[in-house]
Image 1 (cartoon, rainbow, N blue to C red):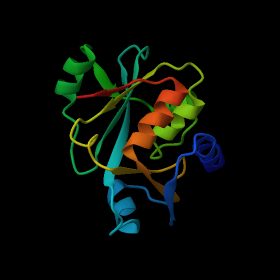
Image 2 (cartoon, rainbow, N blue to C red):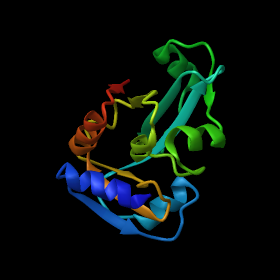
Image 3 (cartoon, rainbow, N blue to C red):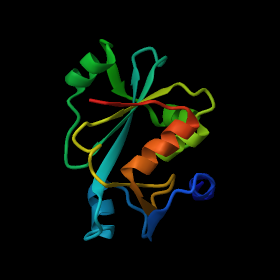
Length: 158
C-alpha cells in the first residue's frame, strides 16, 4: 500500500523523508523509531457518528488527547465515537493502528471529513505512517494540504 502513496506523491512533485523501521503498534513506539528527526509527531483518529453515516479523520499532535465533547461540538453531532476496525478497512482500506491521511487514497465514497488541530498546522513538517506501520513519512505541512486538495478533500482546522 506504500507504493500507492509513493506514486501519488511523485505525481504531485512532493518530496518527503522516509524512515523504515520495525512495525510500530503505538505512537510512543513510532516516536522511538524517529527520535531526533524534525517534524511534529501526529496521531490520526478515525471517528464516526452513531449511525455510521458520517466519518471524520482527526489529525493532532500525538502528545495530546482528543476532547471528544469539544469535537462533537465542532462537528455539530451529538454522538461521535471511534470507528470500528471494520469501518476503517471498508472506508480507507487500512488495518487497525495504521490510520493515516494517506488512506484517503482508498476512500471511494469520498465521504470522510478531515480535521486538523489548529496548533499543528503552522508546523513546517508532520509525520505519518504511509499506509503501513513499518515506515514513517515526514512531509511538509503545505505539501500534505496539497495532497489532500488534489484528492478533493477540504481540511478543516479547529
